[in-house]
Image 1 (cartoon, helix red, strand yellow):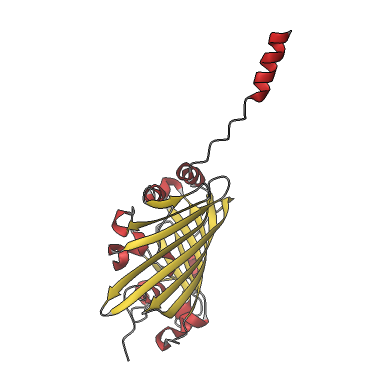
Image 2 (tube, helix red, strand yellow):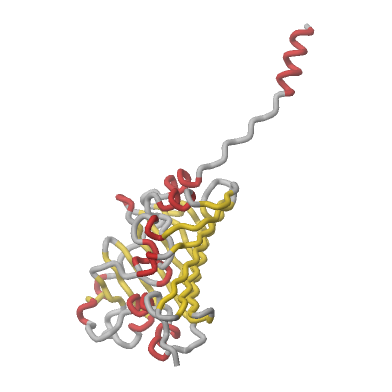
Length: 263
């Protein structure tokens, strides 16, 4: 009887083994499933020589498709204390962007008042981008792994580090010239290892000016059923039919490429 009691005592004295910590890279790979998606709230701030130049706020619904492509449905509002007269319409009206099935569609913003009455969207035959893209694309295979490999500190719920943009897979920072610079990044994870927040910060010295861009992305609703579809065909016109108009994404992305002239 005593050996049995001793065995039971030893068994109860063995401490419980902690559950293995989730691997954020594997968790993200599992989340990127066709027909599913996530909602991202993005705040992009542009500063020149330490002064606030522009803030863009984007609500993005991202939907994952077969083959690894990601479709998006964006609504972006912008604010600038400088009151840039060339961007007034983009400040007064939200700019809408849909990237679906290999095509891009824009509406609102600078397009207000420039489209025929029976058209609402302009179709582009190349990927149209906005300031929400001037950051790190976590959905690109290998990106999260590349970030974590450069972490200077890491816990189960946070990580931060510094990486050269050229070492990030795909077209980091929206393919802008800023991809020659280093990116300071930070990530937050929930208890299941899913990314809940990411921030990036990048700066560049150009023509005696300093350009700084910070992005703050909040991820919610991982795994929701998402299907991003193109707008109705009868509301769409081709970008080639508006040759004199600078389209919304083109105007916004120029802010990441150039600084305002000195007075």
